Every structure is written in C-alpha cells, then in structure tokens.
Image 1 (tube, rainbow, N blue to C red):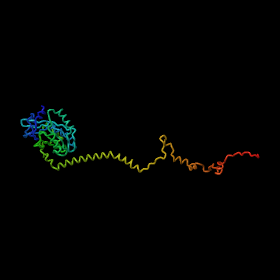
Image 2 (cartoon, helix red, strand yellow):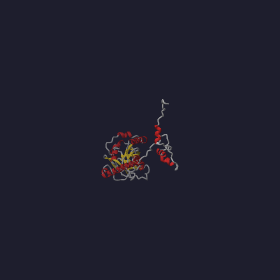
Image 3 (cartoon, rainbow, N blue to C red):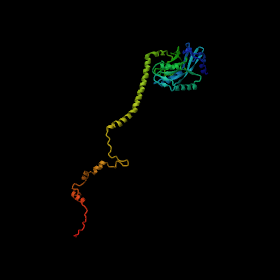
Image 4 (cartoon, one colour):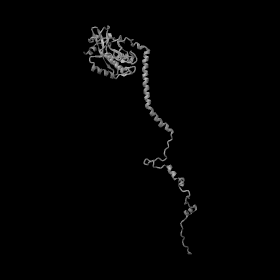
Length: 328
C-alpha cells in the first residue's frame, strides 16, 4: 500500500505527536501484544535497534547518524508510529561531538528509499553519543527542528560506550524523551544491551541550558581540534626539518670553510690526473732542483766571456782598405 501520497495530503498543525493528523493514516494491527497507554504510541522493531547498535559500535571515536523508516498507522485503539527499518547516513560529516547530514548523505538516503522502501517514509533520525550520555545538543535540536519537524517524527540517541539509548518525540513543541515499545521480530542482540524502555531521567532542551553540560561538550570539541592541530604540526615538522637542515648546511656552515680553488684549473679536454700543476713544474725547473740532480764533484762549466772581450767583439768596425798613395 502506497501511503506517501495520502500522508502528503495531511497537514500537521502543531509539533506534538498527539496533534498529528492520524485520520489519514492507514490501518494496521498493533504489532505488540498486551495493553497500551492511551494516545499515539511509538513502536520500534528489535531488528532496527540491533542495526543501529551495530552502526554505532562500528565507530566509537566519532558520532554516526542515519534515518528511521516506517509509517504512521492506526487500529481500533488509536494511532501509532511504527519504525520498520533504518538507513545509515553514509558520507555524513562525522566529528567527535557533532554529526552533519551532507548533500551526499541525503542522495544516498533517497536512493535507498526508492529502491527498498516503497510506500514508506522517513519517520525520524538517529545518531550516537559515544560516552556523552543521552540528550539533544544545540546542534541536534537544530537538525531535528529543521529536517524532522513533523509531529510524528522521532529522534533516537544511542551511546555505544555506555549502552544507553533514548527516544525523543514532539510534545508541546519540544523534543521530549519518552519510553517506547519494542516489537521482538528477532531476538535482542545479547552483546549490546537495549535499554530503550528504561525510565531514565530525560535530558531535553531544558537540560541543555545547564552551563556545566554545555561547557563539557565544548571542551571535548576544543580538545579534538587541539589534537588535530598538534598532529598537523608534527607532520609539518617531519617534512620540513630535512629541507631546513640541508639549507643550513649548504648556506650557513659552508661560509666558514675556505674553498681552495686551483690556480690553473684543467681544461675540459684535459684530464686533471695527467696534467702537472704549475707548482710542480716550477719546482722541477728551479735551479736548486737542477743542482741537486748533479754529481757532487761536478764543476759547472761557464761559457761566460769577459765583458771587455765581448765589448771589443761587438764594437769592432769593419776594416776599410786604404787607397794607395802616390808614393807607392
């Protein structure tokens, strides 16, 4: 039976579960046996709770979310909201103390609704508070008021670390925690307790006015941001310190080291191993080295000529033949 169109024709006048337009809800036998209290009741399948428990236990470091799928029905004793399935909020913005439905999350939910839940509609949402307890934070209230504002829509909060959970329904315009009925369609998951029907003190929007509770949530978020910034700084230092060490070694430490440049560097066509340096050549050709190579009894020969003879030789003029005289 397709009840989507008929539900869309009903206009809800107030945010109160008892004020919902239940006259247009289809008929269905009440799924839980035994007496029930008057008014519009909420029934959740045990299989839905087990699935929510598994989803919450899969990520205890951040909050996870999803939607509750079912419909509103009525029988001869009154109306009731029946939660028959759930859809995980894939691609949601998960944080330690906050969760956000993104556009990708809504696209995924709509695809699953069209494929697997024809004739049903979204009757609420769920999310986890790992270690925080059962309440609706200011961000939770914003999501519930703006995306799940119909009188019959619910908000289920589950603490995967503490094992507690609670359901909030609209009462006099405020989300109020109330006990709900559980249909035992499958056995309860024994590894994870299901204390939905426990009558524990409800933490609603009025409890969030307590500054101590709000301050604790804010400190948890600040601690998460501090840890994230610290990890980023450590990663940045791990990447940057080798570059900085190389720069200091190449630009600062090398300035104090005198670099000896060769006086006559070899040409690029000449092997530096085979070319003698200028210093070695000068040492080889020096007079001291040549003298050390000569025998000890060797007397160096000199070819120097007297300065006078040299001057005579250089100043000699060519002989001029004399002309014969008359006496000859």
